[in-house]
Amino acid sequence: MKILYSEIIKTRRTPLRYITFLLPVLFSSALLWYSSVRSLSDFYIHQAFFEIWTAVVVPITAGLLFGLAANQEENAGGFINLFGNNFERSNLYIGKFIIIALSMQISMIISIFIFGIEYEILRGNFPWVIYIASFILESIGALSLLSMYMWISFAWGLGASIGFGGFGMLVAALMSTNLGNSIWTYIPWAWPVRLSELPGAYLLFTSSMAYPPKIISSGELINQIASGFIFASLFFIFMIVGGIIWFKRWEGRKMYE
Image 1 (cartoon, rainbow, N blue to C red):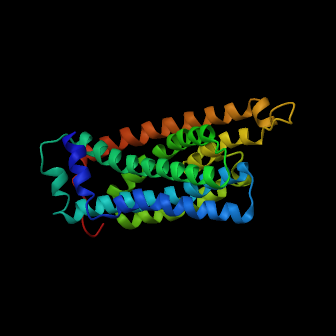
Image 2: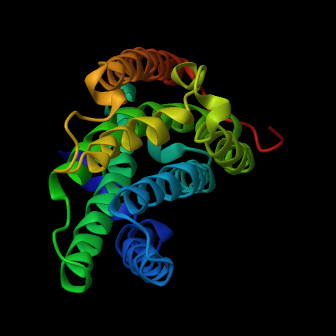
Image 3: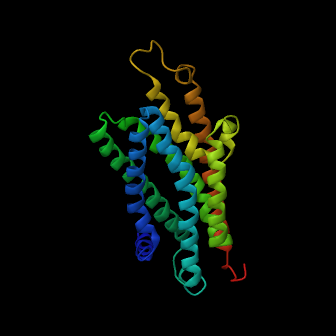
C-alpha cells in the first residue's frame, strides 16, 4: 500500500490523471455523435466503440504513459527513487504496473458509463451486459499488452515505448480486419480488439430469428474466447514474471541508451 500511495503521488502534474478522466468524455461524446449522424445499428456501434478504443487508444496511451513513467524515474537522479529505498524490486515493479494499468481500465469504465448514459437518453435500451462482457474480455487482452509495454519502457526508454505504441496501433488495426482472422490469437496487439468485439455477436440475435447467428450456435464464439484467453494469460504471466526477474538484476539505463 505504501508503494501504491507513492505511485499515486507521482502522478501529480503528469498526463496520467488528465488522460484517465478527460479522454473518456471526449471519446464517448465523439462516438455517440458519429453514430447518430450515420444512424448505425447497435452491433456496429458496439464494434466501433471497442475497435477504436482497443486499436487506437490502448496501444498509443500505453506507450505514452509507461514511457513517461520510466522517463520520470530516469530524470529523478537516474532511477535513484527506485533503487535507493528498502522496498523489494518486485513490489516496486508491480506497484507501478498496477497504477498505470488500473488508470487505463478505469478510463474505459468511465467511457462505457458515459456512453451508456448518453445512449439511453438519445436512443434508449443500451446493452449494458454486452458492453460489460466486452470490457472484461478487453481487460484480459489489454493487461497482457500492458505488461509488455512496462518492460519495454524501462529497458529502452520513452522513445521506444512510444514507437511500439505507434507500431501496435497499426498491427491492431490490421488484426481487426479479415487479415487477422486466422492469426489474431498469436498477436498481442490483436487480443484487446478481437476479444472485446466477440460479445457483440449477441447483438445480431433478434427476436425474429429462429436460431442464433452461426458464430454463436456453432460454438465458434466460445472457442475464440477460450483461445484468446489462454494465449493472453500465458503471455501476461511470461511478461510479468520475466519483467520482475529482469528488473531485480537491472542497474538502470545509461543516458546514451
